[in-house]
Length: 273
Ligand SMILES: [Zn+2]
Image 1 (cartoon, rainbow, N blue to C red):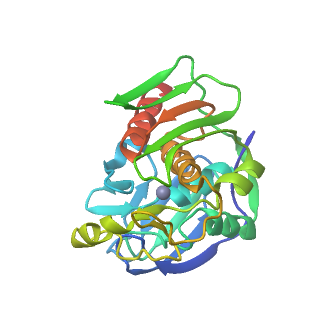
Image 2: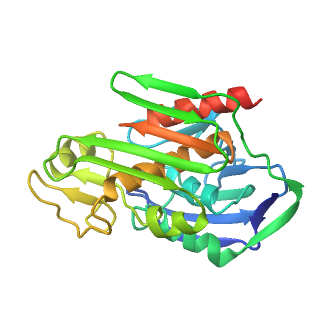
């Protein structure tokens, strides 16, 4: 497989999910072997933050990368779309630390990439293939990746909410399956958490339009899938794991979140080197 970048630059605007701040994001073609690199256009010297697992500095509610004093966060939905649409090299210019939330899923990022078109490059893709299983655990949560000729994710979500409970899915992922089954699944949130989150300065850009909101006994946003929650968990994994590069393997996860996903990405990146 050849590496790919975008055929031309594309742009979108919106507000950040957690910051609530307006942001303009531009995806720009990049040379072979340059990877995915965020560029903070609003900071002096336009600092660059490569999308690499060792640069993860926080996983509270979203994945955060830092390089020097520059930070970007909530990057996992964009990374998920870039990963699954086979974009190896791209410069991601932003004039704020957080990409636009758009509809809360990866759907609009995927559409943006498809609109730009993809261009094959004169370099082999550096697919990450494993020789052995790697597992990361934390109490009753775990994520493991097994050697596998393809990309497959099996996820069990366990949530105490009466309308959620246990959700399980297992997908063999390619571009088509991703676009149809995973990319449109949105972030979920709970009404009882909103106030506490916003006191911490989180979720300020969230609304019923870009978050599937659950009250104590109802869902306030019309669902796109009955099991949208667990599909979004898979979307997040596909973004977080891309911090180790384009991965081949079978990922099995129970109650995994950004902390475990990015810890696994770090271990994969460490072994691959
Ligand atoms: Zn997410």
